[in-house]
Image 1 (tube, rainbow, N blue to C red):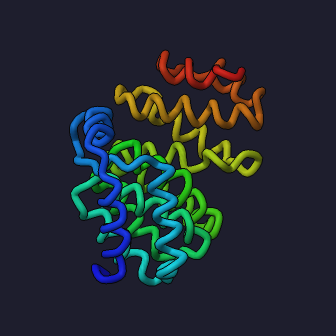
Image 2 (cartoon, rainbow, N blue to C red):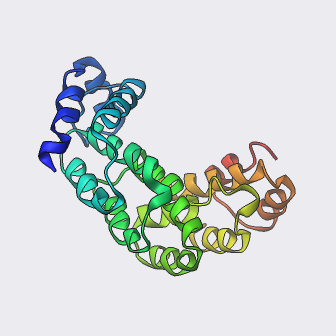
Length: 221
């Protein structure tokens, strides 16, 4: 795996920007080191790399993803999410087990949100029978990031949103104090209001939400 990814890693490192790296590190509360590669450049480099070396088969994605996840610079975790986004429609049913591991390792919103709404969200459309089983496990895990994922995995579902599930999960977490849970609740409702404004209006009128969740949810209502 190292030999396959080496050209990509080397190329990304050549775009190191210390000023941007310092700013990005500060933005994520000094939790991670950065190369300081901007999103546009990072994705261009990845696309050129894949054009030359090929997209890994879905059977190799776990190994590729964890190799990138274990590199010290945060940029490489972003690359892993970008790469997974390219193969998400080919995911195997058992892949949710290691995708869950990525959510709980080096967890912060910048990786969790993509893994939840892009990757897991697509996975559950491929294997709908896994949706309630897996997300219920996430809800019961006590892990804030898995619970956030359970709330926001439907962000792109629009008319296909399971409102019963969304409502259940929001109600169960509505009294939580964590910023990232309250923000996720508001975000999920705000996004769904673009599809069904009346449903969201009724929901926020009939359920007690934190001021943050309410503010986010009512933006378009």
